[in-house]
Image 1 (spheres, rainbow, N blue to C red):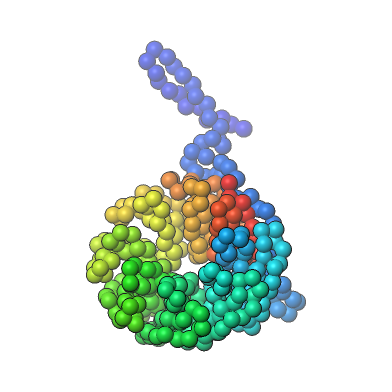
Image 2: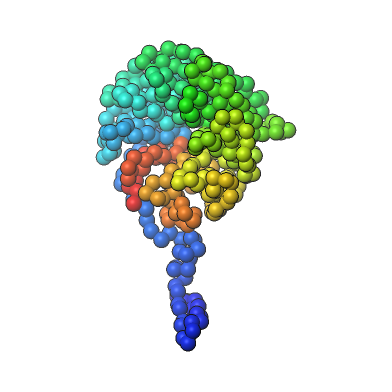
Length: 375
């Protein structure tokens, strides 16, 4: 192996410093200096056949708080509950494909389906407690507050449903554009008595849940000149008096939480996920890669990747973890974007992942559920 040598000039002394190619590549962030994702086990939860291969799995697993149990939905319309060893505790058939993350709330599991079904299951047995039928597909995360479940559908319809009975309290419908949109939709953010979320026409909505969904303010992130791909699907982040949101074509924006007025914009396309960590913003553009911004919109670093669309982002143990629908999982240093590790499932991760302490679980497009230890 050739060793590049660097000649350093020090007063009264010439020093020759030799560094291996590996050392120099690590400094540039081009190779992995350590393994931070340790595979523990994998289990097949969706099996294909000769005539019906496994379809992409858009369901994201969830952890049951205090028990270290994993709950996940599948494209076959099943909900699985497993312990940390991968042993199945129970399995319930909903007969409707699940493409979202279940929400475990106390002794209840809430899960939405692409057929518009919102189901409540018993956490210990999987027995169905109630079902509410909505309009559109439930693809994002739900939110529970004061005995009410709030959930948004792909048809831009927001539902407020009683947690105990599944009865409808109220709903609010927003116009759905008759154009091409990106798959998925925004999940809900909460600020005091306001719910904040994005729509498929590029608007950010702020509504008052104490006034049965009355609109507090609306911010349009797109200009509407081209009606295709206007989506504001990235779930907004509330931080102090600011909201950080994004639309698919126009990029990232900072808004006033009280008025919806734009403070600054960072133009970049293809953003569907946002993450805030230690007063830094992280996001992935499908065209220009992984970005880290300051809270005033200055670029701190960028790392280019070609792994498809980002489906989840979290920072655990100071590792930036990102899943992609084509390339699997990667781990980076959140300070500078240097790569630690890549784990390729061979089929991508369309749903995302969930973490609890040092554990990470994800359902890959090959129908296998994985458990990793984060180091």
